Amino acid sequence: MQDPKVSGSPNTSLQEFDLIFFGGTGDLAMRKLLPALYNRFRDSQHTQGWRIIGVARQDMSRDDYLNLVNEHCRQFIPHGEFDAVAWTAFTAHLEYLKLDGLLADDYAELARRLQHSTDRVRVFYLSTAASLFAQICQNLSAAGLVTPQTRVVLEKPLGRDRASSFEINEAVGKIFEERQIFRIDHYLGKETVQNLIALRFGNSIFEPLWRRSNIQDVQITIAETVGVEGRGEYYDRYGALRDMVQNHLLQLLCILAMEPPSSIDPDAVRDEKLKVLRALKPITMDAIKTKTVRGQYRAGAIDGKAVPGYLNEDGIPADSSTETFVAIKAELENWRWSGVPFYLRTGKRMQERVAEIVINFRPVPHAILPVSASEGNRLVIRLQPDEEVMLYLMVKVPGAEMKVRPVDLNLDFKQEFKTRQWDAYERLLMDAILGKLTLFMRRDELDAAWRWIDPIRDGWDALGEPPKGYAAGTWGPTAASTLITRDGFTWREDGYQ
Image (cartoon, rainbow, N blue to C red; front, side, top):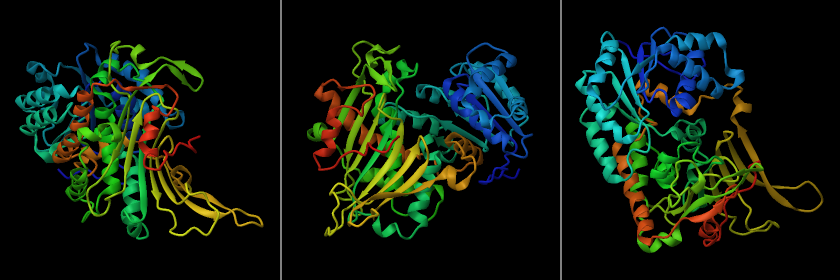
């Protein structure tokens, strides 16, 4: 069978695939995965070959499942993008199967449903606890459900440390070839992350500037205003370091700092990302206090509304020392970036919801204009809440005097392209169906990320100090400001409104 094709046009079509969601009644499926598939279905011309099966342990009929989907999914589809006719047609492709992923006998019915479609693309999306991945894959294999056209999508975080990640990858790797394994990080599917690659490698003006001689520091921030959102038991087992830094922030750092790949082919790109991870300077025990900060939010207010502290959230032990905030000074030991600090920061219950990369260029070598030393050229790549790229240049303020100030050249994707942007999961689901691996993590990448993360976690445990408190609705512990001001810099925290 010929592979289905996909393009960037709104009329993209996908044909002949089975997509099976383990955890099909869960929050991720309802909030992200099914709405993303609906968007692609609505904008596709040929959808007769689509089949989507939700798998979970709940005992319910297909009608019960469709009612659940109608109740929980539609609220995550913007009103202007909802089409009742398209929704009805989309839900006609949904099925449900009661299945316990750990019980081998439960797979017989799934095998029966899929027995006549062995030549179709088959994607198993494991939206479950990572501890279940190995057993699910083994049961899929034992039931004869793994074909050459099969892919498996693994949600993050893949393990809690390097050792557990290795065990999971070993078990999954015995069932699936590496080309069939899609380790997902939804940040890599965001339009602005794709544009970071385009900015770097599609414009000759940036390459001479993209190095230590011109860049002063880099800041990567992912700030959330929400708390644990009913996921307290899960979150308390992982914390911000494992949940956000090990994947999202390090992947953004990789794309930002990697050398130009020989092509856009998956392994060419991932080879260069791996080099970045291996170039990260280890944070040893004697540097834990000066190069890392861990925090935990206390009671405060978000948008004028009082919110509880982390220890008062549902599912959180009263003596929990899990961090909800992390700031790290990372350094790369290579020729391009030696001496340039990369400041990573993420937290819950922060003052604003924002995800962005800030590249601060070095000041002019000899200032002849009256400008503050803190002002200068800056490139800001924002991923949320709006996706845009801003280049700040110094310009003269109109008037008789020679006064200058920074002004941004703003590329707003909504304004520029006038089309609906693909959701990150929408793009990544399509890439998984098509077998396109560029935006997914390779096993050696994941191992290198854990190799750098684990000593930080071990260092915190060895210190035995509790996370530093910060009030909900602020930018985190004061120690995070000290971490960067110690080097003479400040976090970018203006212009978010």
